[in-house]
Image 1 (cartoon, rainbow, N blue to C red):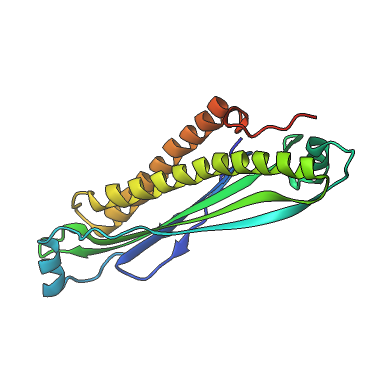
Image 2: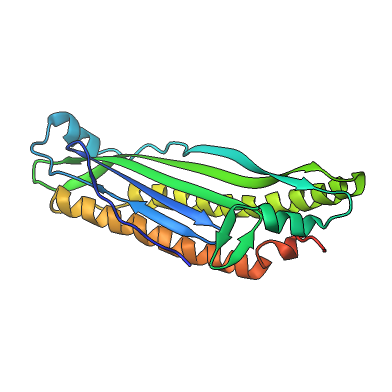
Length: 225
């Protein structure tokens, strides 16, 4: 169940910037493609840049964690404690972990003497946050079971992060490979559509990932009552 919002933000002339956010395990999605203005003139330096291939650069990436506290009693059920405490709820269901990844892209273009416009520089970033439970209290046996569960749960969430990395790589690669177009406005419009299409494809992959793994249960992320 994905909800999308589109919001445009004007940027400097000669560049485009966009952001795409994905929230997994009950996904919610916000997409913020940028709005561009036409390049008013071309320079000799820009013309030279059009003659050279775009230099590849590493994708900027961050991965951070947050947690929520789960209090356990020695005689109580860990699964019940998690279900009662988790803030991650969607469509009447409760989940124990939550991953948000955000792909951002920025590129610059230049027009040649004939007016054809081409991308000359691309930078792409990925920012991921994984939210997991943190156990407080409980018996030694409960803490051991919880740690095994947490390890498997984290592994499942890292799979969502990997899909985000794939999205960032594809956005970066395909923007760099875009052909020249008759004007810069057409180029920017096509670039937005391309990046958005890539994200849609990865949304489908995320749905499949959760279906195949049963939201991580088949990867060991399960607790018996």
